[in-house]
Amino acid sequence: MNIQNPSKSLYGEKFNYTHVSLSTRAIALTLFGIAFLLIIISFAGMYARLYASAQGFQWHRYIEHLIDKTYVDSELNIPTFYNACLLLLSSVLLQLVKLIKGPSQVKRQHWSILSIIFLLLAMDESTSFHELLNVSTLQGNVPTSKYLHWTWVIPGMLFVVAVFVFFIPFLLALPRRTASLMILAGATYVGGAIGLEVIGSAVIVDEGFFNLHYSLVTHLEELMEMTGLVVFIYCLLDYISKKPIQATVTFN
Image (cartoon, rainbow, N blue to C red; front, side, top):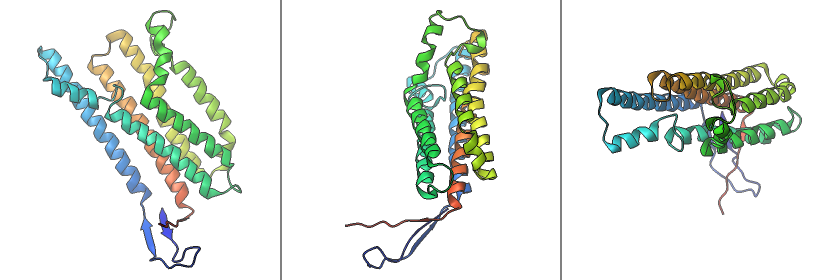
């Protein structure tokens, strides 16, 4: 991915030529490395909490606070912030693709719709809005199987199917490499966000929240979500890199 500035501005002033080369693979590996590190830290913290409970003692409150701030299944903490940042970055890159690819290629409105979807997902990640759909089940008002303990997965699955069907012509119009990476990213993300959420629901019903089995499932779920987003970001950067960007920055 190359970012360059021309030697002259529109007004004729001369600028020094600058060439910035960004490796899409290095960016993706860095983002994945951060995600994997967060998963390791979170799992270590939860394992320490489970060990303390089994041994009949409790960690110092500062350690407990640190575990809460790094645990992937908690809200409004470091992993949540990172996930929201990945979603927001995806939204920004989608808008960038729309701007640089031009109207003569894949329909620009599809890029905009995808960008809005990712922006809404980032907002949901930050606010946990989808959790409101679980209230009636938790209160016992809606009978469901143990696999649907979290009822938000029902409208979630319907939404995924609707989005996929809507974007089939869009995917077919993309280069094969880009479409394949998008499908891989989506399948990985949805497999974690919904697929493993369903499995985690069954574990909750059978064993509760505070156990190693649920911890393993929820960490794998979050790792799949983050991995799917990193693959998607790599896909967009790879697509953008096929057309070098000419950029001019001026200061008055």
